[in-house]
Structures are given as structure tokens and as C-alpha cells.
Length: 540
Image (tube, rainbow, N blue to C red; front, side, top):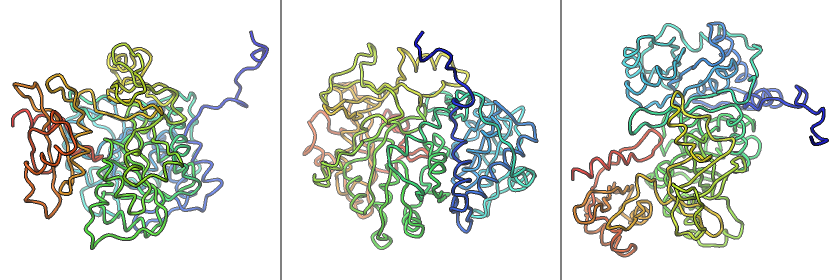
């Protein structure tokens, strides 16, 4: 035994379970009168917000909700969504944020599978929630949220959220988790094939990824954060906890409306916002007459499919500095970042944008990241050409899938989390995604990256949005099929124009053999639903 281990054991004085709950306690104590919440006409400081979280915890505790119980919420980006991120785990319960664009069957599955004891729901979703509850043999206790910034919808319960908080004690002595491995939240995957999987987060991972966000983005104290990212998505990438730790201001937004985003940025001098590439694309394509000049520094963190270089460049030209990150539900949101080097500032805007399109390197709080052969787990050469799967390991990987040991074992095979994303690793160590395993197109034995083809399509002056999927082909096996949304004023653009443009920038075998025009189906987080496009391509 080492001399440093003799008689030195973890004690309450030197070992405390890591939990993001500590963030709000400290912020309320140190910066109690600093602004915490802006939502329409609502203004609250950190003392008020902390008291409301404790009231929620107290009221739920009084109704018999406790450790290990699931509290589901169906809420847009409103103050109550911030409060549940603290009030629910304060009693050891597990927060399950539901995707607000799901249908009744999916919601009913999640409520039943997660064994929700309570459902806190906004009136906007009364119709789908009523239908979902009707599918359950044992529906949960329903708490109605009447957001003054909405003013529509119907109540589903006589128990109102504000009345519930009035029942609670603002000085409630909440519970610190007994173990940092204790579950803090439950997030369901999109479930595009079969039932969605329930991803379980723990206090330790939430704490560390929240700090990783700050370390990666260098947000500093008192950021003004605009909620353009759905808070139900990976617990808002852990930013409810990050912004709170930094005594920042949460500026809420029920719906993503590009013109309103620009207005809020200027009105409240927003410093940070997050979202999918479609959020940036929306800002770039606001009509010229409606655009507003941004006269202060704004940072945007974007994740999802790699933003086309043209979009990144256009957003930076507006004065918004873009940071590109990458992650998945199973790893608490973003865990890699295209970490910037000062010498890159001297490059052209187009070159900088192309660099920023890479997914980058691991967060300081992620212990392992590699691109490797999916079967052997042997790392691929760092040549920027050899494709492998992205693997991860560390404290910010999920506990596992709820009630699904087979899927958990498969995801963790070989001691690494299998992301299912295909990428290359450049000589400088930076990772760049080429495709999802299920999205890569194999045409005549050649691999075609749909992301590469999409990047070219986005450079066409008429293209607003683009997605490429495989279409079955008798001769080649598969060929690229492009789905394109045109900008206003470019309705005359046809398939021949698109293919001609692509031929100038791509090898012949990579050219779209089919081009379909129209709106693209998207998830609530702005990701294009390629599985729906694949189904359409199969019957063209």
C-alpha cells in the first residue's frame, strides 16, 4: 500500500458528490440580486429564482414525490423549464423533458416507459397531452402551466403550477445526492426506428459537462444567454446549469423566429446562443428590410450536421462569432469542439469557415475520443482521408439506456461508446464527420459522403436548404438523391441547373442523379429527418 493511502480515506470534509444543484445555491448567495430570468415582461433575480426552485421541490415532496421518481415535463423555453432543472433533482427525483413536437403515441410510450409520477405541461400542448393521457392505464399527476406570454390553450388539470409553488417552502432543505452516480435526468432519443431509447444522465456527468461548456466557450461571468436551443434537447446541452453557475441571465424564447431573435439580441445585449445549423441559416436569410445591425459581441454555438462553410461565413459577416461543437444525446449534448487557433484569424473568411465546419477535438471534460474501425476498434490513420467511426469514453457518457440492457451493451462494446458517426481524423488531430453509418452512399463500390455533396449544394446561390440521401439504383446499387429548398425569387431554378453547378465541384460519381424541390421535414431541434427523405427516395 502506498504511504499516501494509509489512513487517508474519503470523508464528508474532503469528498462531496458532484452535482449541478450546487450552482444555484452559490449564485443565489453571491449574486442574489443579479438578473436571472427575462421572459416577456417577467423579470426575476437569482434569489427569487432559487426560492421558486425550492418551493417546487417542497411542493412535490409534500405530494410524495422523492428519490428515483420520474417527473416529466412538456414545456417550451419558459422560466418553469429552468426551475424544473433544479427543483426536481432537489428531492432526488429524475427530470424527463419531453420533445414538444412528438405525437400522442410517442408521449404515452415515454410516460409509461419512464414511469412518470408527475407531468408538468404547458397549455399550448393540451390536445396532444389529453390524447396521450387517454392511452395510459395509470396516468400521472398533471400540473398545468399557464404562461402569460402565450395566453391560449386549455388547462388539463385543476392544479396550476403557480398554485403548486405557493404550497411550497422557499427555505426548503433540499437533498444533496447521496451518490453522484444517482440519476438526474432521462432523455429519450428520437426513435426513428422502433421505440425511442431512454438515456439516463447522472449528477456527476451533468456537473462536468456544464463546466465543460464554460471551459470550451470561455463564457465568463454573467453571460446573457438566449434560449434558441430547445431546453428539452439533452437538457439544453446542460446550459440551464452552465448559465446558472456563471450567474448569467436566461432570456427565454417560446418559438424560434429569426427576426425576433435579432430583436432580442439587440434589446437585451445577448452575448451567447446555441442551436442547430437551421437557426444560423434563418438569421442569414432574414429579409434585408428586416435585418438589424448587431453592435456588440455575440457568440453562437452550433451543433448537428456540419454547417456548410457558406452559412458559417455569412453568419460571421453579420458579426456573430461561430463555435462548432458536436455530441449526442448519449453524451449530455456537445462534447467535442472545433477549438480555435489564433493563427487561423489571418486566413480568409471562406477558409476560416471551412475550418470551423470540422467537429474538432474533445472537451476537457471528455476523457477519450477516437476515430477507429467499427469492427476492430483500431484507430484509423490521421490522414484526413481514412474513414472510421467516432468512439467516446469518459464521465460524460450516459449511465445507459433505461430498461434496455442489450442496447446498452451494444453501445458500450469494447469499452467505448459507439456513436454511429463516420469521420476522418486530420493530421492536426481534428475530427471531421463524413456521415452517419446509415447515411453513407455506396455507389458502384465507391463511398459518397452526403455531407460533402450537401456542402456543395449550399454554395449554389439559389439553395436555401439541402439534404442528400441514397436512392436505390439497379445499375449502381445506390445513387445520390438531393432534396432542395429554394430561396425566394429562384423558383425558375431546375434540376439541370443544380446538377451543372455540382459538376463544377464534385467528381462525376458523386453528382446527384435526382433532384427534388420542396420543404424539408425537420425535427423539433431543426435537424433534417433524413429517414423520411430516404423513404421518399425509394419510391421516386
